Length: 350
Image (spheres, rainbow, N blue to C red):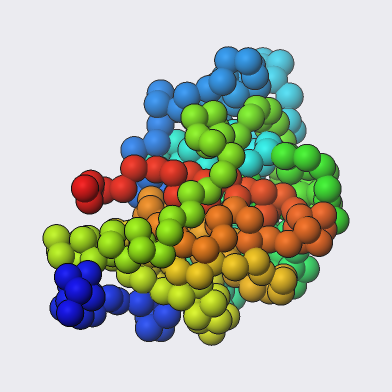
């Protein structure tokens, strides 16, 4: 038996497609904190691009939002503007909106929650609407990253939920992803967000953040694809050293993601240190593509590197997808795929 074949025979490689986790409402609530990569996010360690003054201005505005100055009896401040309970971070992908949102969360005092839109809607699904209200009502601040604007039903539920919470004193900060048919290059239009949450729009001040995708400042524009032999050698080496690595056929993983609610993806990848994928191919089904986007978001949040063979990961979305209404979702995901496959792996294998 060849040494490589013998080595492979000694190891049973775990697969993500074998994981079908369950998640309870209480578990979702416990997870409503910034992801690991933003565990220490602060206004001080945010690195603004000084070519875009709006990034520096955003830090100062968010500091004021988290610690509003009391207005005196003779204050000339316009209360209707300055004391709005909601703030919306409007900017393209990769300008640091999530970092700033997490920094705001860390700076806030009192009960507070931080999660993606998917996590909050999953919480409503798990607990029910009224129980979710009871669970979140004590919060001084709720941060919503990647507010989904492409599901009218979920958007309506979230708008109603936020309306009730704001009425009892909760402050809200949000970013959004891209609504369908919004084809602006590299940014998320505030008017789309405010239109979709029309019942709540008067409560939000828009904070525009311009800039370039920071993930592309120091990386190439292409995800790294390795040869199958190199992927296999890396997987076996990692397993031999006790690393927590998984290996999946790309098609099998895509099919499996269709059987798991996106709110559970965080548990699918829990405790994994490296993800290996074989046979990456072009996707032609939009539902598959959107599930992959949600999965990559969770992998990126967890900072798990990916080693993949086949097609470069950032080339999995077909031309029709890249010209359609979800193009900015795909562009953001491409950016994250590049970062995940070009970053340094946790150990050397030579």
